[in-house]
Image (cartoon, rainbow, N blue to C red; front, top):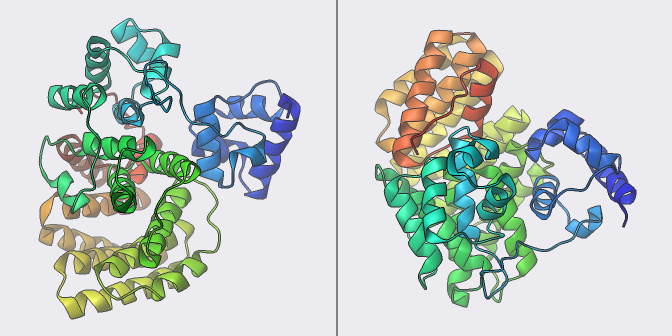
Length: 405
């Protein structure tokens, strides 16, 4: 297809999802002007940008007239690039830096920065250390990233991915991207592939890198797998990917159909967690009744099993949904009391994110500032993240560039 045909396909796809140019551009992290150039046939997306389009809008690259290929590297004998290097881009976004900022700080050209942080090219060890420092990785993270690139190792499935984010100053982010590196380069045994894919998607969601989860999931599916997931595992992953797509403005087909699939799952913690994911989708799509029902189902299991962690998240989501309907101070006080009961960094962070949304809606500038400060502190210490926090920061003018990871 030529440029004009590709542009027409992109425009038709955007309109079929009922997205404005501004919302569609935000979903794939480009400017509205750039998207307009593509649609008018005056420019073409790069391979990485094409992957973002497919991840956010669904479908296959060929449907948009785009080449369905992953990053390539002159330094990688497998010819498949090094996905672990995408941690550089994730860290740069988290630090509020542009590629131009990184280029000026390191003396590396912007095109080279782009190729390095997408894994298209592999920088030398010294260059990688400079890049890591510039985008806000800690010395330990930068050193571990370098070793994962240059030493013969691959990611392994992790028992309890969430627990990796409970250690201050830990290596959770490197762990997540190392998993994707092993998956996309075919370095894992067949029986480990789907547990590792589940861990990696879960890790990226905890990091708040929903766009990264969609991008890498799209590449993983395109590459194919020698093994097949179990039905429950496939449902849980489909729901998580649905949440990622809805949170970045992409199209989500039939969320009620997902609910039917989750109901068919074996009762247990995986089903309860998946109901909670559905609740967050309902909150994003403003379908309160569905969200309350899914909360109830997750809460029923939590009550029967005595799982305090899921019970906490169920109550938090219920209060958040209540506020979205009533907009009253009672819901705010309920979430504040929940925050006082929170155990561990993840529970406190989830409560702070909910409070930030409530304080913003109520116009409480002082309360919002306190929430965002706590969120930033947790993100720096534990590697957590949330697209909602980023959006609130942009709307409130609090987006800032940070040197800390």
